[in-house]
Image 1 (cartoon, rainbow, N blue to C red):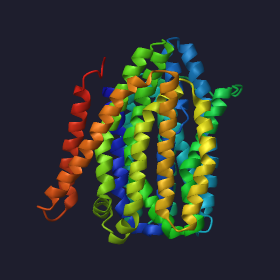
Image 2: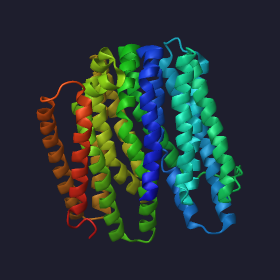
Image 3: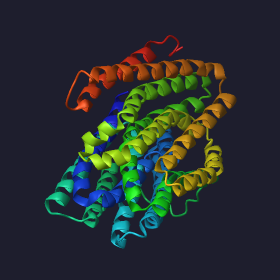
Image 4: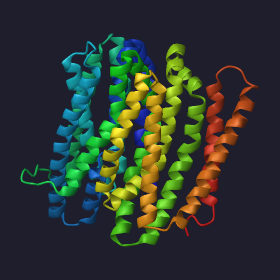
Length: 468
């Protein structure tokens, strides 16, 4: 649990700094140019969730070995894989950004610096997995928090104080991220790893499937922005990207569970301990959903108030509030999806996940295209929300059918339903309380939301049968 808290605090702390810097950057660059930063943040958030299982597979394989030579061999093999994947991320991110922004007067340097920064951030997953496999998450997150502070607080100050351009912003991002990777690489020697690229290493079929899973998932989560830009223009893209980056905050907490749940699932499955897996699956699912359900419902319901408080811009808040609500609900479904996704990867169902992506991608693109043609930015976001719901239901059904009886999911259904009821009741109570207050409504919502989130957690943890 300490490791999970370390992961959450590291990612959440950096993310809060990122969101705190947004109003200053929005004022500095304007809504249209901030849309470029929104695309960058969206890709960054997606990479945290769709590394295809490489980092967790690496951490699992490394933690099983005690022999230093074998550890060095495993580390070097995965180091080679991550270098190749970082090159793929550089090319893929560059192409996606270029296609989306090709009609804007954005220099090629901006796109290159964005792609370099994103590919370097992907390499950080390798170093995080290296530290996690040795139980050194605290050390990793200490450096990561320092990196985030410089990246968002210092860089934002430099750009605003010296009236820097969007190119300056991404130049600082790329250089700082690259230097941090070098720092992690040098410190990895303290874990007794000697990293040398394995040039003769040939990727397995599973590695190739995970690579395709990474590519298709990235396309799924970025195609909406390309469609909006082509059909509805850069202004709509700016507001959509702003809403998407704001709605991504739950993904930070969700991604922390990836490193927490996957090694446990892999270990239990490796021991053929299905009972232990079911208990861990239920516990992790309830813990995650109970933590994010009430906050996401609140954010979706009070979207305008939150955006206006955050941005201080009424026009931007009005333009983004409805689509923001839909995207937050989509991220809520992703939260519920994360644990089944981890379980599927642990069961080596990568090919199955890839097939789902390939089957649903054309449908998603078609629906989003039709929505954009009718100038419905909310329709584009709704298509993405429905995609997440369908993906979640398919994975849950597959896990229940193949690996454990549906009756074992009854407890999850009961707790989820109870949490939903608590969320809606809390909204009614909040509206009643707000009528008695004046001024900043958001300041009243925060303690109420926290109170009902703790209530959901308490009920979930006290429910009989959780550990049985």
